[in-house]
Length: 257
Image (cartoon, rainbow, N blue to C red):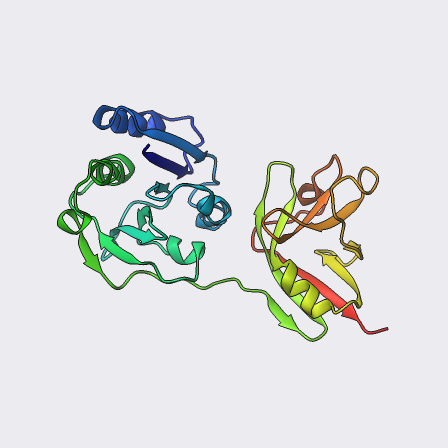
């Protein structure tokens, strides 16, 4: 069984999605095309990388991921294929892979073979079909060693505080922060704490196990299924209420007494 998975900012309102899928099916009729998310905010690699990171290992090996965000190349930019954990990520050289992971890919290939305004179909879909048809990747693309590396937003961990970054807001308005349960527990060391949310008038001082432990419209914090800190409200959008945005800082302050 063959799989091609899509992450784009197309919003499903234009012809792009249909054109890419139609082209792929015309080449390989029995392929499975999976829409991971076609509603990424325009040109925003940050949430796209988070979404792929959150589900990447759930896909079978040999899956090909097409990232349709910031794809038009300029200057010395390239179309790339990253081979990682026996899967393939097709994207432009825009820093996406280093937003996705700090790991080193197993191999990187340059796919530049056409000049186009629609690389998702004319480059990525075409290349994906060649891989799935059994063509040798080293014969249809050029191996490279250099690609764009971007700054990582890692938590700042100190003795009495952790400053994290809001990396994703889901459809419920819940805010996901790049602080892991392990980082929190190690720094907390059973001390009291406050999670400060934007304006200092908003804070949380306990970690829930589930979303429904507290009453409606109360702030809650918990560690979600992928082990990251999540800030939420029951039956309401915390992000709208206190105007949280991607890349906002979230501080956890710890107290010795």
